[in-house]
Length: 582
Image (cartoon, rainbow, N blue to C red):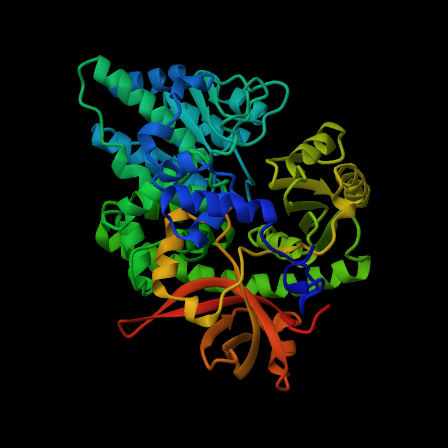
């Protein structure tokens, strides 16, 4: 049954509210704990029983951190790393060019630095080398180093790792593994096929952290003082959110405690980014995903691939400032490129039809650094798995993004095994691929078939799930602070959303680049201010701007708008519906 009778909103979505069972569970949690009912509604939706509520709201790393040895090869990898430090061996770090890879590399660099050891950082160029280790780079690193640590990559790199003959290669990764592993000294990966998958939601930086926990244990057994690891949790938190890892289990503790570390402003690169972007308070999960993440990623997308890792690992304030400015500039350039590719890709999606199990688009000269972001835009616009491929000559490099319940990574692996892709890999929600022009249509047809078997063709417009209804006077700063206790919010743990029923719009205006700012008033005179970013790229902005005095239900997330040292409640508007909707 739809919430407030909204079967099709202005954006075409059905609104879903708490079930009767959830309402009863929320009341039971409130009665048992004394917590507010809105907070208990969130706990009930996440199926947290009353006796576990207090622990859930205060996730402690000491309670949730898994035993590192529960992952295969962790003890072996840590022992090899400790030996390299003890012997003063030459260490190289081969990292992916995204936030997770950069944070993983920075974790190792900081840990090694505390032990008086340097490491060579190598990040491949996205265009010239592509994702992951390649034969030439690994062969060259092997000539000058005793150990190569591949982070956030390497699980499928059989030939490149074989090319590093004579040098020990340790892979610390989280991407889906194949049936066989490369001939590395150790492969630590919760998504190996011989793992139970219980830690499959960890990003690569979290896996690196577990390896360092084990390495510290071995150092203590050898009567050596190990480096402080708690001070590195800001890097793990950043990678967890930016890589869209599910915020459950230990990931909640990583992010919660990592944000506390970040608030101390000790990571020079993140301090520089905070100041550059005029952050008006301590960072939260939103800033990790939408302020820091895109800028750190920008180097790997359209600039020098190692800029992000260098920013996160630098100990020089001047270098931190210069790197932050460069990444901010690259991010602006990336947005311009992305806007152009997005428009062309959406046009292709419309031409092919948005109802297929897979939405895909290809283009000559599309920058490989933005195809993943554009795939996300297609996915959000269609609620379908999406693939976007940019061709340079006869070779295309693409990225894919999936929706809940559809395993894109496994389907991409099947295509690779069948020879339709030259290269491919990833995980459930995201994947990368390389394909020849003469096989792209066949490959996309086959991928669509595989995804259809998983139910992708049956998906309709995504429902908007709401946690209840509020009147404007209930939307207070105290309520927001209370709801924040259930954070961090992100993948697998969405921010609370509420509906404000039956409001009349007293002010509405297009601002900035297609955003909507409005004020809506209830019958008792109380009102709520709202903003909807990008509202005019779809039906929401035009529909509300032409309100003509009609009454609307508004839905979205509450946030604090800080301006000139003042804090006010603001609704981040996501959807609206005529209040007379059947």
